[in-house]
Amino acid sequence: MSSTWLTTRAWLLMLPLLAVMIAVIGWPMIDTVRLSFTDAKLVGTEGHFVGLDNYVKMLTGNNFQRALVNTLWFSVISVTAEMVIGVLAALLLNQEFYGRTVLRALMILPWALPTIVNATLWRLIYNPEYGALNAALTQLGLISEYRSWLGEPGLAMAALIVADCWKNFPLVALIALAALQAVPRDVISASLVDGASAWNRFRYVTLPYLAGPLMVALVLRTIEAFKVFDIVWVMTRGGPANSTRTLSILVYQEAFSFQRAGSGASLALIVTLIVTLLAVAYGALVRRTAGSAA
Amino acid sequence: MERKSLLFSIFLHAAALLLALVILAPLVWLFIMSIAPAADLAAKPLKWWPSTVDLSRYASLLTRAENSAGAAFTASLVNSILVAGMASIAAILLAIPAGWAVSRTPSIGWSLVLVIGTYMLPPVALAVPLYMALAHFGMLNSVFGLALVYLTILAPFTTWLMKSGFDGIPREIEAAAMIDGAGLFQTLRIVTLPLALPVIATSALFAFLLAWDEFFYALLFTSDQRAKTLTVAIADLAGGRVSDYGLIAAAGVLAALPPVLVGLLMQRALISGLTNGGVKG
Image (cartoon, rainbow over all chains, first blue to last red; front, side, top):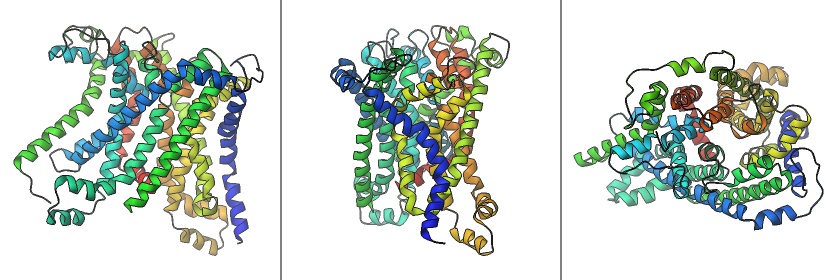
């Protein structure tokens, strides 16, 4: 069989997938670009061409800048915490202790819990009147009166980050644990014989094995965190005083609550551009890590 | 291995206990809230251990009496199963030929990279045109419309899983069947697909869970019991004026059961999938 025929055949087999992808991703993407240059409403008016007006209005507005800062804050803190706690948990799970198998199995639970259920659960825990957090801290004598964890601008973002970390650090831990188990025993023994300190052993023997998988986890988690919507929507809807309004929430409000499809689309494309830049930068970083670890 | 001092061993066990507590406490509390009498949950100081077991929330969520909380909940349960089921089957049907083609024809591999690259697109980038198109075709608030939209997430994901699965099946087996005179589709049907069955099953299962978990599109494109999914129903409960937190907790427990059971039973497959992705980058 000629290679041209093989390639043609492969494309034919890809055709159904590509057709559906063009219909549900490709075309909407292009239409979002078109809409972003118009003043179209979500329902009714088609809108007119307004050039870069939407972009200028969105980029210079307070709302966008505030949401960008909120999103960066959420992403940086929660992803950093998830990576650090995840690696520490993996190092622990790689040691020998009673109940290790059970604990490893439990790690899957927060990951498996649906995002919306996780958000609802934490919303109940943070409840200002009947929540478990207030009850526990009061009974332990750590706070004297109940607080509104999701109702105070300074606290709400921290409360969201804790809820997000709890759900996602076990995934990082499981990925790191799998990588740790791939470190050959004799390499560790050799470093012990050479008298390497615990820190040097981690830095020069273990970390190179962890670097690749951890980079991938970092990329995936950062992109997910930057797109965060569900947990914020259920727990705070962006409040109080817009202190937890992230970019995805802002786009939702602009395009769907206020039905301004045009400016909503321009905002969505700005978010897409940032995520793409992040992904490209990270991609380069992953290749470099993979190169140096090999 | 190195010899461990008693002190180090105590430290390890304390740390493990702490980790177990962090993981379990919120989950156990969710379950306790779902079975504790409403009065216990509103008591100050809070009653951590319920005085009696109250299963009335589960009963009321699972009845289909008209205009009850149960009617809305069971309708959303059925919608979630329908949407996730239809979208997973469609995604697998698209992924099998595409995954095989990419696995056997590396020269078109870049097209898969492109398809998977769509993963990083934020859903908000597609939401407005998708909303307008669904409205145009009268498919807003329809399980079919939502299932179609879910292909944006499920199809790239399943194609990637199927491609890795086919990579693990040696081409030589297919070549042998071809030499014996079998055509392409006969070879695939008799030789390749039966070998790929475990991968097809896990891919379908993971796709189902991904759809089960989805919230953003469901929030945008559904508006009542005809299409609202479980995630939207739970967000409604959490954000509404329900005064019994036990009811919200019970809904959460029911929605969490399928993915939690699958997670526990399929841990090995799941982690090997994660790490394969990690190693290949």
